[in-house]
View 1 (cartoon, rainbow, N blue to C red):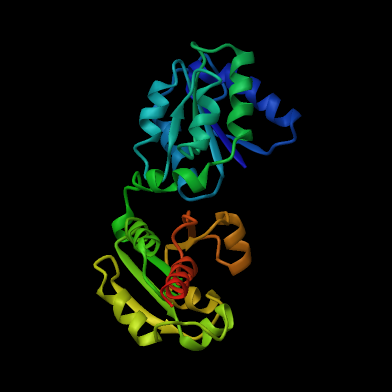
View 2: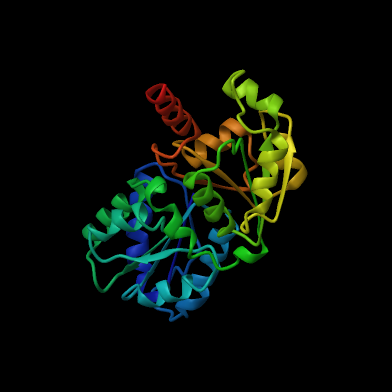
Length: 284
């Protein structure tokens, strides 16, 4: 769902964009105004649309005024909104890929109808480059101190990848809760040769990290019941999946944000064990 709004200077361009969205079979809601002759305050419409985006009642929003500047300034005052002022075709995909912009701001005095339509197309068609840019974008979060963040894992032999994941997770909220897989569940996931360290040793190490506020051992290979019990605001996973894939796989409720920390291939317990085994063979 796309939400649109403008001031009086953007009504005509808004009508052009609406016709284009309808032609493309996309759903939209027009918050107004509808008469270009009647002067209105752009701030009122920017705040109304931004509130809808913040509450996740719509996926994306488009705001239009004469230059787009006023709309972008007003929209970005609302937590959870990343409004991008776009006047050219280079910026349109980049603000989606790099910044995960969820509101597009256009200037009816700056770009003609055809260019504006092309900007809208580029913006809507570009996916967020989550794996590359998530750490930077999340630093823009204004209300993170109130949020509970949940992460889980084996954490067998701690390495830099684990540290970076937990530090990233803590940056997303005020309280980080970590669930550590039990020895029994690790064997199911990794095989009989794992874990190397016992569940209590692994738990003590996680609890000692300054980013972790609370930690416990859990005996399941799935996280659905824990998430239902803890009711976190954010769930953090490390890996090569997308947030949408993790949400579907783990049945994470829509009201819970899912953030993916891109793990580096050279950071893994398996690689560490392989290096140790290789060294032992050379030494013998």
